[in-house]
Amino acid sequence: MFFGPMTFIFMLLFFFYIVFFFFLVQINLIAIAFIKIGIPSEYVFTALFVSLVGSFINIPIKKIPQQSMTNETSVRFFGFKYRIPNWEKEETVLAVNVGGAIIPVLISIYLLFKTGLWEKAAIATVIITILTHRFARPIKGVGIALPAFLPPAIAALVSICIAYHGAPVVAYISGSIGTLIGADILNLNKIKNLGAPVASIGGAGTFDGIFLNGIIAVLLAVFLSA
Image (cartoon, rainbow, N blue to C red):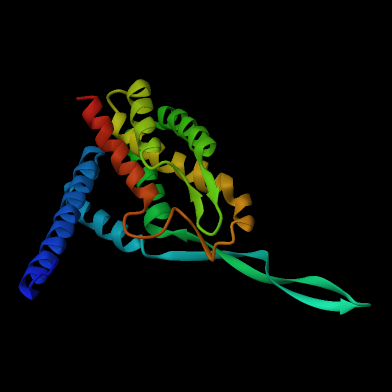
């Protein structure tokens, strides 16, 4: 099957249009979530911009030595061949992601002081911490993996049960901080065996997982409590 050059160009433009459309939808949903948890409207764009830019920034805090057997050499001794493993030491850079760790923590602290939901947020965060730690799995060469929609779904349900009228706020705090502690911080001892070049607390990349956990948890809580 053959396509003309103009057809290919139109297909390419359509693809970028779809990507741009979904990006705008995502931005809009995040803005709605920020408004629902009480971020003043004049600061919503700033929060979005800082979160987006911050998701690309990893602050290195420590180097963790890795030791892996990469190849083998051999020697002969009295007619016998012996394989000698060649151990090559490597390092994993432990970093903190600005958009996925620092920003959600700062927003959560702001919300706690603003709403006073300390006790309810603490209970929900403990529950999410336990569950995310239970389901988080280390993947060699990659990092710590977790089912994508599990933390926000549980955070939304728990927040509605614990603090119905303050569900969006509690959902954001527990979905963000609970996942950060349960999936990342409590699994730091497993990093040395993963063989990954970089281990980022909070994730890395555009709108990483932990940041979206809080946002999706808020939207689910709003929907379920409506």
